[in-house]
Length: 181
Image (cartoon, rainbow, N blue to C red; front, side, top):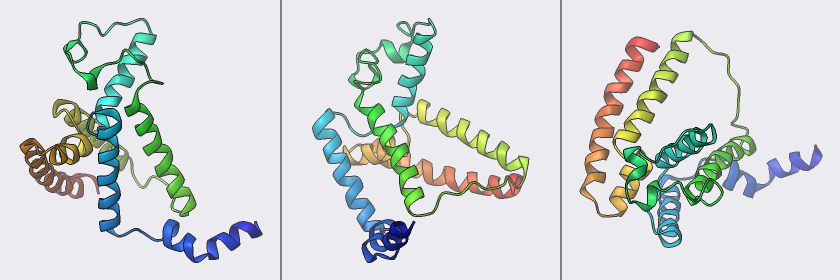
């Protein structure tokens, strides 16, 4: 344990891992990741389409078929499920984001299991997740795919999505305070 105590006292640990990074640093890193993603995969960065693929792979592993579903029947590189999980770069990115976020929270001592204050918060979290997931699928993207990648691809839809997301956040926040807090 002495080793970890020494690491936590290190100035670089505090600078790179414990303290929050400036927004500009995060923006530059996100931009670099977007450029690398487009260069390597020939597709903009996306998160939610991969979850649709995961659902399709699970459904097919249980004996179902998605061949006739409109979403998977189209000729599009970002909706293909032929390669499977292991050959899908989006799946690896999503796993990396999940594991990286957990790792970052753990090393910054920011991971905490908290007691549920009320079941209303559980309902709010479940409803929020369902609405966000549904919205990401009907909007063909989340804040990464539709907003960040849309703007980076010089698409007007990215700016429209950003405006709609802003107003949705305002309305959602007011509903959260009024009904669930």
